[in-house]
Image 1 (cartoon, rainbow, N blue to C red):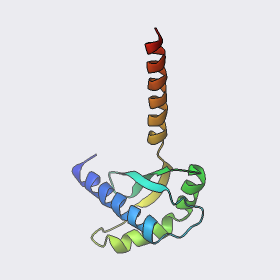
Image 2: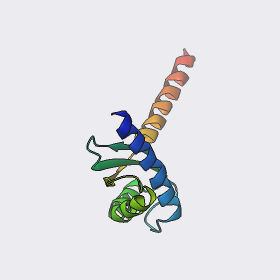
Image 3: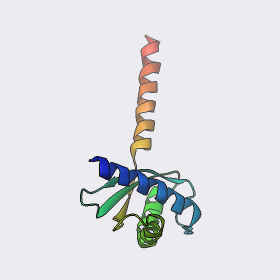
Image 4: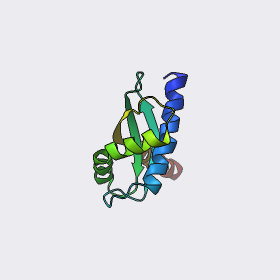
Length: 116
């Protein structure tokens, strides 16, 4: 990614986090959801928003995608300096779960390695 898309992605991440915490009222969205990363297309028309969720991740991401229009409108208000706000696609961030899996494998290897 370029410097501009990286900068836009980071601003989007911060603003979307604030919108989720303060403005979005949807019972299907877990209160333990957090925005971990945002990637923006080169033309700045699309943004993939990665969400880490404790609880029902699938339900939360579906609810966020259903609320994407509202979040986009709130972003337009918050980020007046952007000519156009990208269309948002929310996705599950599996990196946290992947990290836990790797940790458990390493612990298991460590336990078996100390037996011999």
